[in-house]
Image (cartoon, rainbow, N blue to C red; front, side, top):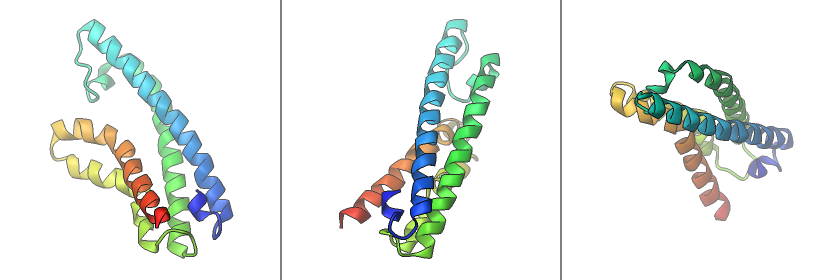
Length: 142
């Protein structure tokens, strides 16, 4: 958000707020997923991410996923729009490195291989943030 503040203060606040909401909800998703993996292992089911959906308790993840997806989508759109308009501390092409695009692209690319997709799809939001934060850090460092 700080890299947007000069040109788009409202977008900067929105990105920071949604980033906080998404990161807290994402941490809860990881905690609940870990608890579900523990339950799966105790009942003899495979604890792989794609197998957890078979557990009835997995329904508790849905509202958290919706919250994370909503925060990620809205924050990504606010970031991309502000960067694409120009005047921020980021070059305009960095608008394409927003978490929504960088989450969806590898997840969709992995779908033809179910075994890869079982791990790539859940990891994609985390990897997307590594890409964005790395690109932002490199840009702001110059």
